[in-house]
Amino acid sequence: MRSDVAPAPHEARTPDEPAAPTAAPPSPVPPRRRRRARPVRGVLVGLLVLLSLPFVFPTWWMATSSLKPMSEILQVPPTVWPRSATWDAYGEVFRLQPFAQQYWNSLYIAALVTLGTMAISALAGYAFARIRFRGANALFVLVLAGMLVPAEVTIVPLFRMVNSLGLVDTHWPLIVVPIFGAPSVLATFIMRQFFLGLPRELEEAGRMDGLSRWGLFGRIAVPLAKPALAAVAIFTFLKSWNLYLEPIVYLSSRDKFTLPQALTQYVDAYGGPMWNVQLAATTLTVIPVLAVFLVAQRQFVQGLAHTGLKG
Amino acid sequence: MTSSTLTRPRARPRGARGTAARRDQLVGYTMVAPQVLGTLAFVVAPLLVVVWYSLHEWNVLAGTFQFAGAENYERMLADPGLRDSLVASLWFSVGLVVLNVSLALLLAVLLDQKLPGTTTFRTFFFSPVVVSLVAWTIVWRFLLQDDGGINGFLASVGIDGPNWLRSGPTAMLAVIVVQVFKNVGLNMILFLAALQGVPEEVQEAARIDGAGPWRRFRSIVLPLISPTVLLVSILTVVGSLEVFAQIDVLTGGGPGTSTTVLVYYLYQQAFQFNEFGYASAISVLLFIVVLALTLVQWQTRKRWVHDEV
Image (tube, rainbow over the protein chains, first blue to last red):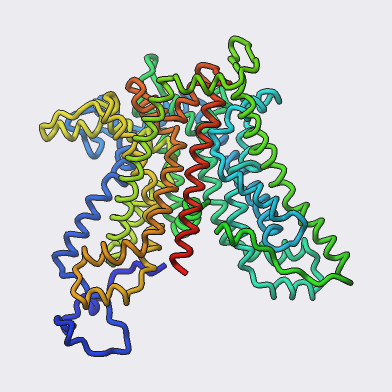
């Protein structure tokens, strides 16, 4: 990807560039893209600032509103900065629900799903890319078919299956189905694409050194696959962390809930949302992920761009 | 992509390596076993079972489960609720793909101008992608509700805003817009990569021929990135069919059934009305629609490859 750094000052204008096309002298160097005039660039930056609002303001509004007391939260005109900030709502978050437990549920489920998916997809991706075995193509097509089936299509039979195994209201379906089922197929596909690109010579050299197939996999292929594994880890973690339909179908007791499900439960006796508490809980959910994103932005963008390119 | 996925590694000569190759085969099967068995158990089997279920009259509360042939499918044809949900899905998908793709393209073009602060703006536009969907939707519900932030700001400049989530047209618009801002950053990145693949020389040649910026974009850049535009559009449509959490949190399918899209209707039939047989038939319909769209996507992609080579 081209770097997005701002142009150096001396590049900003090329006044000596000929205006008439006939006067263009033949040059061995391709001509530099002409810079727009300053006013136009100013307008474009202004447009970017304006367009940023709906992306940035909701997060700001969430965090600041969670600090407002109920009297201020729906006040007109709205206060952009809380006039009388209070942390009360954050206490309520933990008093009304076992929020720490719910946080832990989401965290450990996402961690297990991520680790499991990385293992399964590295193994299958490697074998599909580098090992010749009978029926490999047929099996690969079978696995790829998993990408064609939206989770919503199989939710009824999966629920019956989970139910008959007595695993409703446990975390098992939220862990096992994503690792082995459809969600991990994209990961396998990405790992396979990566391993296809590994030079054959690396494995030949490993064989010379007496490595077995498992040795080639564990000592050569996997260590080289860190970027692909990072991409898989990021989108798998976020996918599990954001899961909504499955938890509300499978789980029914509060201490088993995951975060997305728990966030919607901060309602008063009439079913109306308790806004400051709900927003405080939402802030606690969002801020850590955003912080990690800001630190590892490049990996996030690359990892998630893969999910857009599936199919 | 499809054709490359089917190529095998070249064959190795037989002979002394025979046992090693056989051992290799065994390792291969072992390595793919978890994924293959998992796909069979959690994708293929449920898919077959859902078709089987769809041929049954099955209400969990009433305790009925009997073979009914095509009854559920006949019911679908006559069900105004299903028709409404298909209409809602159509509106949602069309609105989403139009708004999402045009905004993504606009953002990508703006970010491609080497303006100051581009990296920061890219971070801004991408950040909602990593925010939890339910969290993002909750914040927007807070903003869009009748006495929420948006109407509050409107009121302070003397405008009486509508009750966004409680009237038909604006509720659908709200669901679409919230979804667009959530995920447009992904498409923006794909477009940005495509734009950066457009050769400078072609643009420069057009410039020398006297083409203005808009003309260059329309006649040169847009045709060159059209494969990406088409791919992104289809992926966005397929993704739009799976919208669920936003609907559940923002509108609950309402007002009336104006935002009850197909997946939400499926969820209601199965898990609110316990109509598992009928819900299974709706699942089959959903699968057919997604499958058809995906096949269209593969066909068009094949065509581009011919165009490009």
